[in-house]
Amino acid sequence: MNEAALPQSTVHIAQADPDGILLVIHAGAGNRGKKDTPERRAQVEQDLNRALEAGYALLEQGAPAEDAVCAAIRVMEDAPEFNAGRGAALTSEGIVSMDSCLMTGVDGEVGSACGLTTSKNPINVARAIKEKTKHVMFAKPGNDLLKEWGIELCDSEYFITPARQESLREAQSNGDEWEKHGTIGAVARDSSGNIAAGTSTGGITNQMPGRVGDSPLPGCGTYANNDSVAISCTGIGEAFVKEVAAHQVSDRVLYAKEEPIEAAKAALDGVARHHGDGGMIVVPAHGEGAMVFNSEMMNCGWKSPKGSYVQS
Image 1 (cartoon, one colour):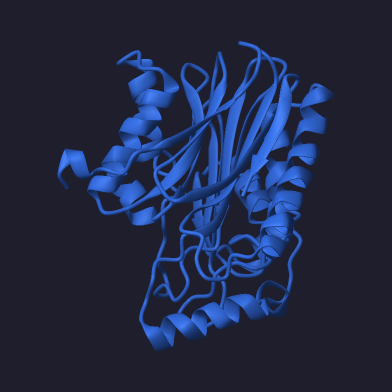
Image 2 (cartoon, rainbow, N blue to C red):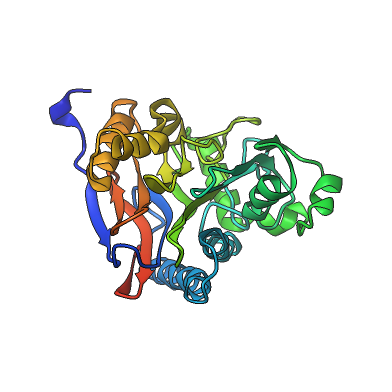
């Protein structure tokens, strides 16, 4: 792609004291589409605010960053407006296949899961893998193992909403279009100065069985390093994988000494060269956070002692 043709990135600053607590969230990036209505946008904003409140309350109490990240993500997984948990996109077989990842910057530990079909809150699976096993990633862990980890399970009917069934019918009858709305994520810095990142997604409407995007892949859709930044990405996953987007932002900050915003914009330029678009939320180990996207829109928000903001 010609450099002049690269889409311009939009940047919103997440205000915070240099070493103060901060929570930034996203809930998908892409085009608004024909199903966008004032009512739906109002519901999305309400859910974003609820997620911010849930995570930020823990940061105020001195909880670690990963607690806030998981709390915010669980609220969004339970909201059917977003492509994660309840309301996840449906595969070509008409079922959900959910992915998640959680990474902590203080120790570089990470847990990741893909192909989940029964886990009410996929982010809890990622956390269980990180904290209860010696492994990093599980594909389609069985229900017995999930129960052993204390994961709440639901029947498939819980996840499948009429809106997602309609999206699948349209994709199968009118030809595939990228499902670019709804992947959710959160990044946070706690009162100890540690950072963490988490991402949860239902993938792409009408995706082939077994497809995995960037969200559960450490360094592609999710990454955290106390020496640089915590990042969660959303958009066309294949392009973020090819660009190793999240880790690239960290490397640009850590080794090239770029500012987080410039690093994020450069990584999104790379995503665009792979014919993708989307966005990312960034919280550095020190300084203000950012919400950066090169798509038409991104559902996102932030909260700190300096205030709060959401957009849908």
